[in-house]
Length: 267
Ligand SMILES: Nc1ncnc2c1ncn2[C@@H]1O[C@H](COP(=O)(O)OP(=O)(O)OP(=O)(O)O)[C@@H](O)[C@H]1O
Ligand SMILES: [Mg+2]
View (cartoon, helix red, strand yellow):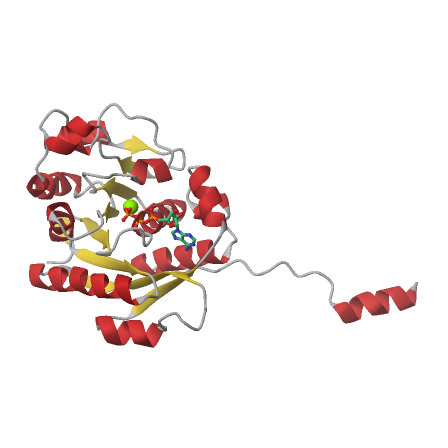
């Protein structure tokens, strides 16, 4: 089953995974969540990276009293671990202490995810790097998978492993997000990636040097620099995922060169 239905309310649970670390999973997760919130959807993002969590840092979540780890340990209810970001986006951070790291079992993630069903339109699970127990548990707990990769062979081969895992678990693969595209000759092309992975590239997010500034400002780039090419692409992807029509802002139109010349001649 790809979409969990509780009565009239559908909750989509989408894992964002990659295999390889550092390719942009958390960036994609936080920006899709922020975009959907802007579109009026009830979106929640959860850090399922139990060993090296960082979703909270991307979104500027303060040291939060209750985290996913407390829920997994049975020491907090799920609602106590939901932080509401000023944008309205709901965030479940994971604990960052060494004690948290040792005391939880990723296998219990599934039960936590089930508790979220019904109250949100879309739940994004930000996966850990690698394909260890916590990533496997995240992919298994989700109905759908977004695979993030960079246009280079090591990250695409790892993405293939994440895809194979999802296929084995019956998690529907939505497609591939090709992140940090620079357009250089040495990069793998969209068709290379599609033929290696066997799934369509549903988004091509450009390399954006403002991404680092937005991380430092603890704000998703769709809020920090809403008209940048990467923001527009991430918003378009978010809209596509939920079937919303998204009109990208058009570039501001100043007077053309010819009209400037004519304006000058008329003086
Ligand atoms: N399109 C982009 N352009 C430029 N920098 C980017 C882009 N996407 C992500 N980054 C940067 O790459 C770094 C890694 O991104 P991110 O933390 O999202 O990766 P990750 O896959 O979640 O990493 P991990 O596997 O460690 O959890 C961050 O510094 C982020 O700002
Ligand atoms: Mg991450």
